[in-house]
Length: 58
Image 1 (spheres, rainbow, N blue to C red):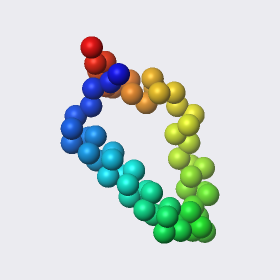
Image 2: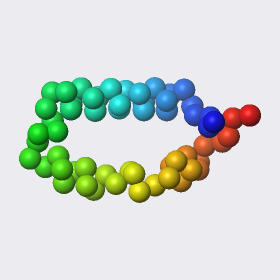
Image 3: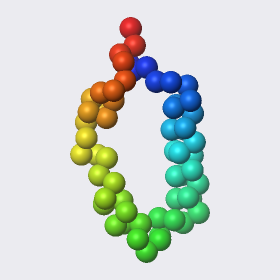
Image 4: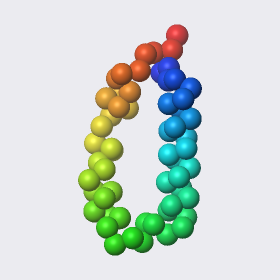
């Protein structure tokens, strides 16, 4: 388990909500959506790599 600041967690949750709203509204049919998502490439990083800057919770 990792520790995260409350304001950062709130920002991440807002971003997730915003993305879901955009996709439900059809932004995934946008002409450049596939290209933007191919640049995203977050899946190439492991969870440990993505969270290395966060402290472990005891």
